[in-house]
Amino acid sequence: MNAPNGLKVSLLEECDRFIAEHTNKADRNKRRARLGTVAMAASTALIPASIVVSTAGHEFFWGKLVPSLLAAVAAIIAGLLTAERPHERWSLYRRYQRMFEAERLRYTSGVAPYRGADADATFASWLAAARLSVHEEWAGLIPASGEVASTTRPTA
Image (cartoon, rainbow, N blue to C red):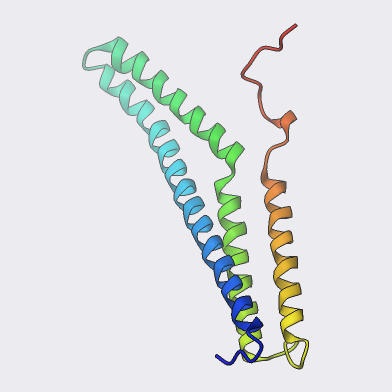
């Protein structure tokens, strides 16, 4: 890769860093989303199975305790998935990963708008704007304080 002024290499390195960062975040949120969904589905699906098992004996344990614990686990997982929103974060980070990859290809190929003497400045400007954009979208996924249930009592 030609880099007569050295700027192009550092811009590409910065873009590659953004790509790696967003890939890692997307992968982590994908795992969290899938694990949470599977755990919630499994815990709710096991409730009726536990009740059926209770008919063979140990009615309190299998018919009341285990189902209530499974329901509590499902509720906690549902709350975490609602608050953390890993599905949305996974989608956000994967979309920006792909955007950075596509823009990097445009830049290295010299296609519009990266033709001419201002290609480096144009790419740097795009990188900065995209970085701010992903942060603004991410901030929209964070629940507002009014949306989060308080777990502590207010002090008088």
